[in-house]
Image (spheres, rainbow, N blue to C red):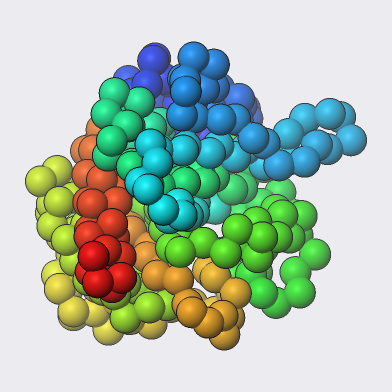
Length: 276
């Protein structure tokens, strides 16, 4: 995906146009900003400002209709690797669908971070402009500003669940990682089933160097974007990976289907846990 400019029109990705130079973060976020302008549910709440007055990290909050109790707080993160913009585009698709049917997000406060590595996205590189892989820096005393901002968000909001969106250019199918609560697996499996309407699943016994079972990996790299280590109760933590060499629109639709399913399944599991 290096040296690629993402063209968007309205809420959905249209095409990829090869080109040189840097990609503008505000360009990929323009459809989300447009939705937020006229929305009763989506708020644009960027994190911090740099010395030039630009937003440090884009952040959006989608508040679904009240469910009658406390909101379920989910953090959804994309493009922590700058050469994986598919997740950012998928969040636009997801929000567009929620705008049309806000009841899907009933009882949810969705904190959306579509471009967690702005400099890497602009440069079309996996790493940030400092040369660091930000997804190996969390909870290790990192000086990277993006990591510190996101760690503060995770601390502050005490998410009930964390979902990371990634694309893998070495995989021929969908797969995912689970961490945190035991129910993480019970959310990832139906999410992958929904995503399989658009892309095949990677069912190899070893994926990305880890043992896997039916496209689910139970180990992970050190320093990934996740909840505070040792937190109790632990939130569910899911990472969904699409095969990056697949058509872009199929990856976007696969992410969208998976996110819808996670909302549905987690609401149900939370209700069951409360004995409702």
